[in-house]
Length: 110
Image (cartoon, rainbow, N blue to C red):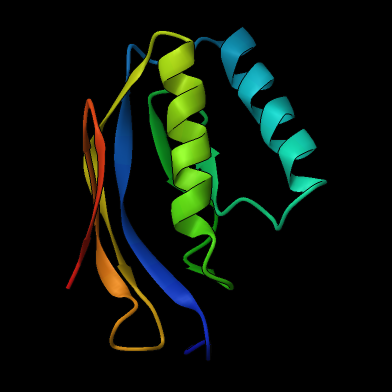
């Protein structure tokens, strides 16, 4: 199924050290409160607390990069580091690239 005007994600970010249950709960609450003021966050913590993954295969809007910065900053403030990469493919040619993280978050447009 092709979804028009959406962005598709592939990949995940590893969280080191993994989030224990209390921090997973705290991050989810933090994102819910932030979502009340903004659009829905396209990222979520995997059930094992060891990675950040796209919430859905496809997402709408263009705030996924800003949300990733919000998640990454929260994790850093709690003593965690993101590593890995996620490719994204938007509907427009200019809306494609790779988010990479290795102690620092970087967006590279294709």
